[in-house]
Length: 211
Image (cartoon, rainbow, N blue to C red; front, side, top):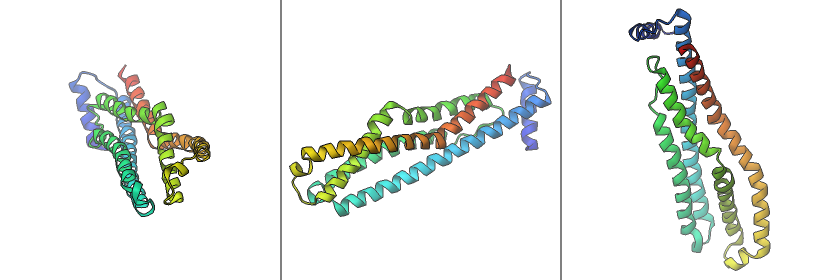
């Protein structure tokens, strides 16, 4: 445990007339350490998500450009840019909120509350019904339609989207949604939710010693 941190925490408690004992000071410092560990893991995972999403977007556009007939190519590339652009911008905006956050011992509670608020908004969105039952199925169906267009070559759209093909597409969408929705929720839990819970636990511990 850093000596300067111990001295600073002790000094702050004297100035604020809290008069914490040795155990409470050590508890605060442990909460600060645990909080920053959880926060740094969230920051790391934000960066991983941004890098992976950017690489996938580039690969997806390259796949479309090299494989799709000229008639649909640029329209689908534009749709891909918009779709990935919105998702990446949303993730980047949330990452920027906590990018420079450092949870210090002298502003422990306020920093924890704000950090939890910022991360929780992102977790709640990823776990929302909108993401699970609208955004995710849209992404899956978009990928399947592109695969269908690639496989069809220069066939007219009326042949590509005949009733039997639409039925097959709908069945495949249900099956793939049943696989990818739980998987995406698992990733959200491992990358963000478990660390958010750790921060909430730190806040709860702080409130216990505060009272």
